[in-house]
Image (cartoon, rainbow, N blue to C red; front, side):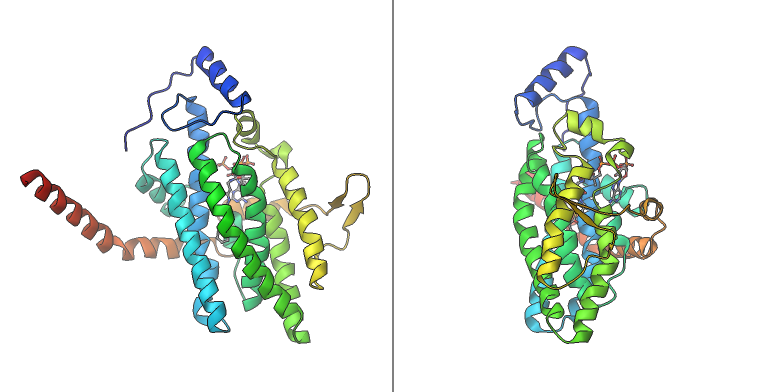
Length: 320
Ligand code: FAQ
């Protein structure tokens, strides 16, 4: 991959760049961009790609235990989609002049972040419903906004990914609706999953705006079109009605509806828990990284075979 042209963040060029953003133009890989814009995108997109890949683990471990062939097929397709999203976004980061191999090594060495949500365990089948409904639901709210991001390759990736996430959300919600309408035990299982996944899902949107060091730059450069708190609020507003419709209760008894703003006002998130999980000390952080390292090691022969094949092809074409 050819590295992006060296950028000299000279104020005149930055001003021209910002004028392009203000006019709503899309920035493409060969366009000049401030070095900080490029670095912010690499940071955010690589964390996003890692999240999609690590995000296969909590659901992947239920493929063999899905309760019917239909459920198994949907879940398998969903987990494969997440792998595709990860690879697609890694491709997007490569348009910024980085090598995905280096990004993967950052994940495996524990220096790169990925979404906190994937460090929670999937204990029952209802958790698969909750992940689809809430985690994909939150991802859609976030990514619909990112589909309007100023960087073309990322925005276009989000358009395609959101279409698939919509299917994921529906399959999760359908699992929850089926369980919630089932026996009292099944209803309790669905409620328990909602209880455990609700707060971690709200944490997916990141810290409060006032505590979000990256938001200023990301907003100024049109990468984030809405703030962490705005998106979290939108997700809550959408989800309360969905829970009611299937007779489940959001585990936040203090929640109230504000008639003026039409927002559901929810209780404070446990930010200590959030930062603990982000910093590597959540319920499954170690397990997730160990699984990714094992997958990487197990795949060494595939990478070696692909390289050997590419070399053979190159030799054959230079001899011809
Ligand atoms: N977990 O300054 P901010 C999915 C970090 S995909 C871990 O507010 P920013 C699909 C943040 O990186 C889910 N770390 O950061 C699926 C920063 O650290 P840094 C992933 C978090 O970037 C479904 C620091 O805290 N989606 O679910 C989290 O402006 C089912 C300060 O925060 C994306 O990645 C967190 N929750 O806003 C797959 C979407 N929140 O880098 C499988 C793209 C914050 O300075 C199964 N990303 N941090 O050291 C974004 O929209 C943004 O990056 C945010 C964070 C909103 C996540």
